[in-house]
Amino acid sequence: MEKYILEMQNINKEFPGVKALKNVNFRIRKGEIHALCGENGAGKSTLMKILSGVYPYGTYTGDVSINGEIQRYHNIKESEEAGIAIINQELSLVKYLTIGENIFLGNEPNRFGVIDWPKLYYETSKWLDEVELKIRPETPVINLGVGHQQMVEIAKAISKQAKILLLDEPSAALTESEVATLMRILRRLKANGVTCIYISHKINEIFQIADSVTILRDGETISTKPIGETNENEVISMMVGRQLSERFPRVEHVSGDIVLEVKDFNVYDPENSQRKLVENVNFSIRRGEILGIAGLMGAGRTELVNSIFGGFAGRKSGEIFIEGKPVVIDSPLDAIKCGIGLVTEDRKRYGLVLEQDVQANLTLANLPNLCRHGVINFNEEILASGNSVKQLKIKTPSLAAKVNNLSGGNQQKVVVGKWLMTNPKVLIMDEPTRGIDVGAKFEIYTLMNQLKQQGVAIIMVSSELPEIIGMSDRILVIHEGALNGEFMHHEADQEKLMYAATGGN
Image (spheres, rainbow, N blue to C red):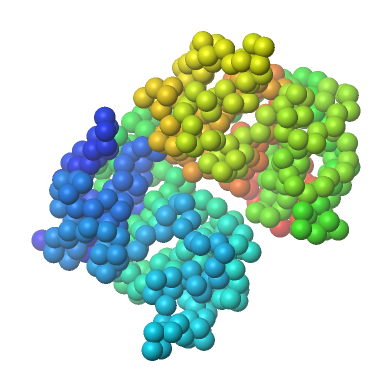
């Protein structure tokens, strides 16, 4: 009988009104990289929270065994003592502490009860070398970009000498080069006998790195297969329970007149008013067109679209025209009045009010149109938000459900729905499918096509080149704040876009 380092047998977990896991079985061999796939809400994170002690024994049924011994964790510390470390999608670093303080938080080396700072930072340097991060260990985490913070999280996890490493969407905020570094790190850990569970919505990554894959759907185990015995289409089909005819269902559509034009646009660093983050950018977009904006992380894509929307702290210069008329946009309210909406890159931080309900979030940007004499007409608000839930197929128990309790894909639909209520002429979508599963991505793409056919101009910023190529009518590439390439849909391929994104002419 084949021996497994980890077995989870007949795992059941319920929340009020929801059965999150139903007799799930999951097992993994020592030194294996095992992918765990499923749509948002399939039960992946719940299963990992059981394994890592976030949900203690007694709150679920079933058995968790490591090397044949049944485990009964009552907290995260007990799971760590058993050799398990988790890297969550939501970073857990203390931003005002240094890298070294974060890595050894709660486990600081000491002499006679006093923290041994030289040893702490010396040991931190070794772990940073392991993740190929060339940064001083005394650097405050708040000074790091999201990608480097993710690498610090990985360094923190492997510093615990974990036997089993859980990675939940570890590449969501990483650039192409950082993903390549992550893959090298995982292969090195595998060679050293560390077992990895890799959760990702990026199917291509799974086929690069995993030895085997388990698919969950609606809280149940659908299948476990060696990676060499399946393919991307089969995995996607098992995840969503149906065939997706195309990953990127782009439709051809004849675009109309120019609706937005940006001329000689510059954006400056809020911390250094002389430093340009975006330099002399010129572009336009027509009705019914999807304009993709590609570039490496830090190239200035988000700063550009946030400044157009009036939501960036740094000063800007240049001209913006809506339907040929010059406009001044100094705030998001100005942008909304001009017919511009922005689906933000970080939906939880900037796109949603997490503790408010679905109804309040959907109508937030459109409240002036739902008011009579300064008072919200609640009947109209209920009707408008209910129609939005139906139109976008948002899975929610009710309009009164807190948006924080929805899956990532449904949260993203709420953000999109909020802006659709304003009837935008231009909809900016910054990383519109980040952190959502393939089924939800397909629904977002289908919605983009519908908006395109209705004449809405869509600006899509994305780090995923297949997505940019698959959905855009035209693509702009930004390198170090400046436009460095423009491609029509039929001209674009990943090599050309990456060449332009890295500075090639």
